[in-house]
Image (cartoon, rainbow over all chains, first blue to last red; front, side, top):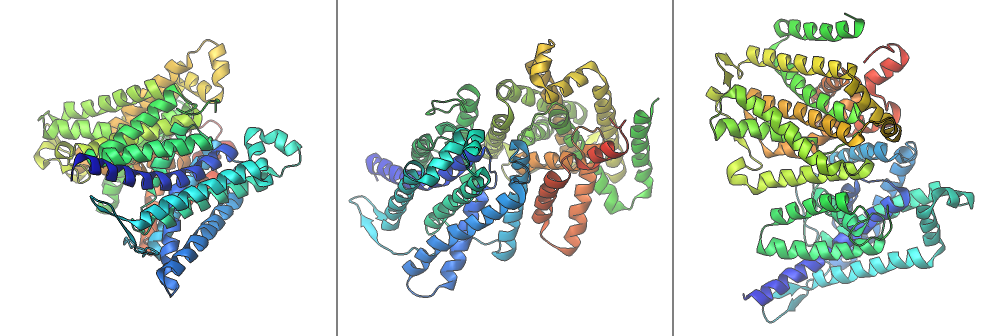
Length: 293
Length: 311
């Protein structure tokens, strides 16, 4: 294969990575923006989504697309419920203290990993794609499902954007993000906002996982990479800024695809992590952010 | 000699007596716990006393471990100087990270240290041919000796672990008594007021972090020589979380807390593994329960309730 098509393939794979990453990272960004909580267990919500998707597709008979669509509904709801319980039982008791919640979500990370290991097992298992349609380009064939992942991710992101900018719920969330005390003074129940946002963030990670699991596989340790990459994206995009998060996901996803194809995935990650550390040190508002955190 | 000093000396004497009293299995465990407690003490200096919540201490531990391990294996440095090299490597790595990371604070500091540690871990994997990558490498048994003392044998290993532990513990205790130790606590309690009183927060925090890294490096170096294995997994994020867990459990900001935390946590996992394989769950549940119900840890609670003089 020539350089041109090779680069095209790298960019296309990078776009898939970027789409999934944007969904996961927007979840993390929402939680940080509105609640000021750094959720270290976000990657495990992602993992949980993939594992639930596997159970659902095993349990539901019939054509693969029926099982897949069920998983796409069931997984975010279940993961959202786990997040809701976490918020009520743990985070709220800690008064959302930044450092205590970090320690608590590290604990949650271990518990969720252990739960997946115990009930799902140590094996990586694939989930069948809802359809097997191939796009034949002149140089190589590409899975049509990957195109569907991109389209679906964009659709969900648009829905989130619409939710945030055009609905009462979004208004309430933005008000809480801007000034929690004033929001409360205006009669907004910020505890309920927190619970909703935490569940929504976890649900977004689960949606991303269900979309990606027919391409990769469900495994109990699969949460580490999405967590690290989401952190990177959220920081580079500016903590709490949704638009910045999406732009950064595109940049990181594409460059990750290109560097991974032409050099080594490990090198790509070393560069990305160092970049993040330096961005946080020298430009804490993020590369695309404008306001101070 | 006051009661605080007597208490810590008593712990050291009890550990010395344990050398002849313990059965072989617990003997080896305790040697390992003492080394990990030194690591946790380093963490305590940064987190418990200076208020720096770092998630990157695995990097300092691994820096000590690799400096010593590779110094012995590749450069054929004698074990004694190699151990010293490990201590310095941990301190230097912490100082280098600190110069950048200490420009931030709070949550950002945690993420920056996490990212640097992750970059370090990935670098170890990237240079797999030299570092052994994830599988690591074994240090030659013949090289694991200082002069005539063979550190791979049970008794010398325990006693040398105890020597390191005692030096670290007494050093830690002394540190809390110095003016510098008090200025560390002042940073934790109120950085702005300390600045107003004429302290330079950056210098104090950087020195504390470098000291903390030197403890971690010394622990990593000792671990490499005593247990003969150097591996990439020691640079992973779980080795940054372990000392945090030990310190939180034992009591952040208490000198004996890290040791108590390491001891209790080690045996909690050891005993629970008799009835369940779900050891990750035990770790996770411990973290959650401490942070919700006992945010001051075991000795922190003891100090609040009974022993107000506990350093």
